[in-house]
Length: 360
Image 1 (cartoon, rainbow, N blue to C red):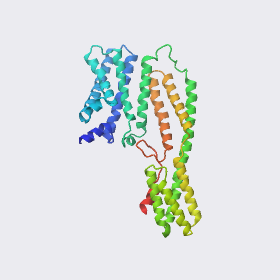
Image 2: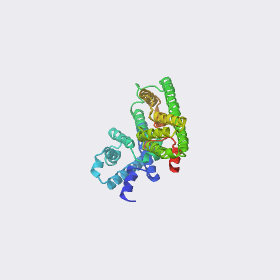
Image 3: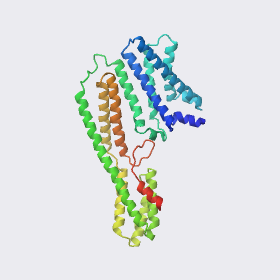
Image 4: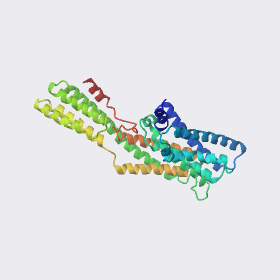
């Protein structure tokens, strides 16, 4: 393993080992925040609890310290890393515990506040990765939001939940139920429309391939039909929604077909399917609908974070983000049938077109 492979292990996780290490680092961050909340909520602790927390904190400190030193050693631009957002967060992740070991104030309030900065390590996953995101799948998209939601809930549990002014448990049950139901309806409506469009594209693509197979038998149309098929495939695979080359080729194809008196109904059906595909691939959900759906989903999760108390509320928060966030990500991905970037999870099946092009 060379230097570049080690850098990619930390910065661009692609192998199973690198991905497993990344998930471990996330679990350690959550563990650290959970212990911090428990320590604050149930202080003073008995000797057994203090011993367990001390061992966990030593493990967390060792993990973050080794991670920080490894990055510092392998990265070429060390000063750039130290003064970057990621570098500062990595330093703050180990600084509080180091101060607690060497200063006689291990339980001081300001050190606990400083330890909350560990959750910002989750925000590093907002940085686009290469093919790593496809390997992480859906959870890659949700992890940063899980980190933010968990940190907010832990802050509420630690500082305000036991105050007299805070919302009583169950006070927002009815609004949460109504907003949750409305969010489900909005997500379902978008899913139905997007899924219908998704499969309609695949059906039209299959009909086009069937027509192109027939055109291959025509000597005067074989070359142009081949170029047309290759252009469409290339434009879909490169996420070119303008379809400039295939449109030019199709115009030439129709002219030649008319000159040799080829069946007009076949060319007409081909044209309808081709225009249908171009329209559906460029169609999007109305922006206002998307905005309102985001507001409804965000309000639902925020009210759940606020209203469900204690560590049960923390678990509820994580489940809500996973379910509502996961539904939104998947539904939103249906709305982008040919967007094959590193965040794409679902794409149309163009195997019929690809097989046709490979066979000619």
